[in-house]
Image 1 (tube, rainbow, N blue to C red):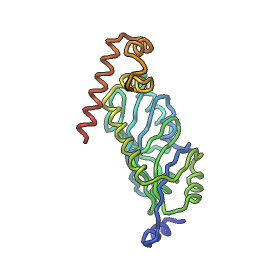
Image 2 (tube, rainbow, N blue to C red):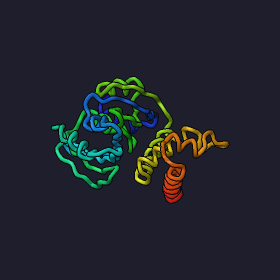
Image 3 (tube, rainbow, N blue to C red):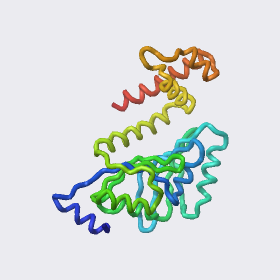
Image 4 (cartoon, rainbow, N blue to C red):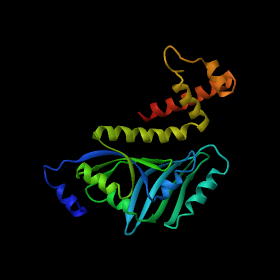
Length: 237
């Protein structure tokens, strides 16, 4: 279904829009290549198109690693399709950038009239995970997406699911700004090991031993991380 046909179909009362969750490995993607740097996640916040050019606003989550900013920029500069970029914000564990490159066919398809892409979406380990809405049927969307990458997962979901998961992704970005990678790693492991369950499945002493740090240091990491996340959550409500 061409763009003009899609646009006309939306004028018909009987047109039904379907929401899809897609996980794919792009055949060719600048952001996909950047996301293959170990520990790096690239969040696409928005895209504008002007003629044959597209500017993508991205939030980049970086790991605790020496020269990580340099590694990221070196990879970005390897791609000739990147025409320009602007660093809006640069922190120890993150960057916000506007990247302008030649318009790719994937953007042309997902951003064309009648289709909607939910932002933000994430690229990690070379995989793009996103939600989109289209008036096309399941097989048509899958066929078109398969032209731009290996589709690993493709499922129809509710609109509410897409909204919820996209909102949680935005909250995840905010959390990444609020706490350090070390605090995040400790909190994630504490949750996995049942530290926050009732009754607790692991004690503070046992958890500290597994991290190889003192009980007091672990307690400080947990308290600081909890305080920052609770402040973020309650202030945003």
